[in-house]
Length: 314
Length: 319
Ligand SMILES: Nc1ncnc2c1ncn2[C@@H]1O[C@H](COP(=O)(O)OP(=O)(O)OP(=O)(O)O)[C@@H](O)[C@H]1O
Ligand SMILES: [Mg+2]
Image 1 (cartoon, protein in one colour):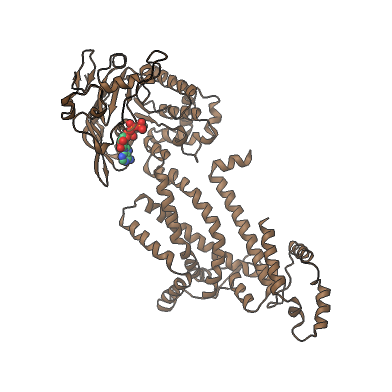
Image 2 (cartoon, each protein chain N blue to C red):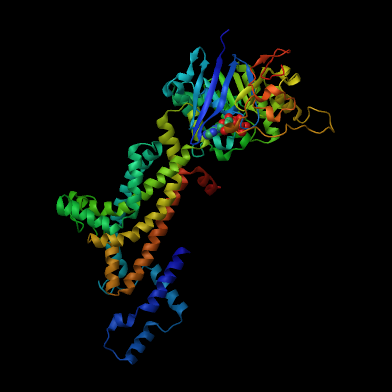
């Protein structure tokens, strides 16, 4: 359903802005010739008919041909996707690894100096735009300290040996190239998560069942890290699922700053050169990824929340 | 002479932003082995706070500011958290008011039972499972094996409260503190749960502190009673004596307001007014603005507990 709506929007853009005739034959043809070609391509058919044809093609994996790359759009996107996915994955990993311990700490020891510092810092963090952080990172770690590379993906390994998935996770050089882009992408969401986890956890700590856990004489570590933590995770996972889609949107900025050859970079290029087919293909595919990720997150949510799981199986 | 549990001049304060309020004001209580004690009073009288202070688990701005609690010969009110943990849920178990809120929704009944045993006993998981099953049978839960794998939301309120009672029994505690264990349940189940609790305490010689505002329940279940008002115990003694010969006007008022204590057709009597908020306790006897038998001294002097003609204790100037 969601996919249908998105493809419809995508298609309307295409049929209104794009001029496939120009894409095909260039500017130097007479209006009469243009009309003939348009007719041949079915461009004068009613909107609904064109749209059905478009959906049918998409279902067969045919998004048309990219103007810039002169290859099928799907292939172009699939080639760029791994870079973006690795960027998002790396950023998500950083967010999880950092925000969980910090958020939990801030919830358990709200009066501790470090927690106060964390809260102040995260307020500041939310308000700095991502390109500024990215540029600051580049300036500090690449230009001044020279520790980390500031653009490109570095050395990559073709994991499936078919030319599609070139991974930066497997070589030291690739990993070094991942650090700055991932950190700056993560930095957008990190403060938000620290705050979210902290407030959710503090709420859970006030509940009756946590008080009961204390009354049962359980060890503090078990109460905090098993009882309270699992209940904290429920709302956080939901938000995380929604935000991971938004993170894909933010990759456009990050990839531009770091010259990262991913989908976001490709997207901007497509805009600059009016490669409509590629743009539409990007929109539709990113939307599908969004839906897919949310489904996966929902399934994971079902795993940790027994209430959902049971009502699902009944 | 030594009792199982003694509260000596216990005072609990809540450090609020507007200043400290005294929630428990000089409470003395004793509980013997196998004894059942009812703690009654209106909402806000300090019953729950008294219960929680015994296991040193008063909610946040609250703390024990004076007095001491002696359990089994040891002053547990000065125990460290570490040492206190060996008592909580082990020697003194607690049953909370609302079974819907008490169990953690994301863990199975089995997990929540077994973790309690493992926290206190040096036994294996399978031994713990065996004990858990045994206790579930004891509280008369149908098909106990399947319960272990169920989550709280799959069970009814009455069933959950049985499970919570089973958890309380796991470590064979010496005292069970039940804080309004049936208030959240419907009437037929209330009676079942109360009967169960009473029976278990009798057969296992456990002591029970039953916190409630239901005098009818207390008179059926407990041997001793303590009536609380605004953080103080105003009347205490053998339950049947206090119920049939109340000496404090507040207790009299409470008894008159039970349906069934009077002849059919007569109007229920209510105590006029409300209990004062703790920050605005009137001078003298805290009950004096609502008291029907008030005399001059009630507004100036705080009454001391005195022995009554029927052998109970009451804090009232009229005695
Ligand atoms: N967390 C808290 N913060 C501040 N004051 C509190 C807190 N908990 C209890 N109090 C104070 O202690 C008083 C006694 O509370 P308590 O919960 O013991 O009443 P109760 O007799 O159990 O009433 P109920 O029948 O409603 O359970 C309350 O009137 C309230 O003013
Ligand atoms: Mg209470």
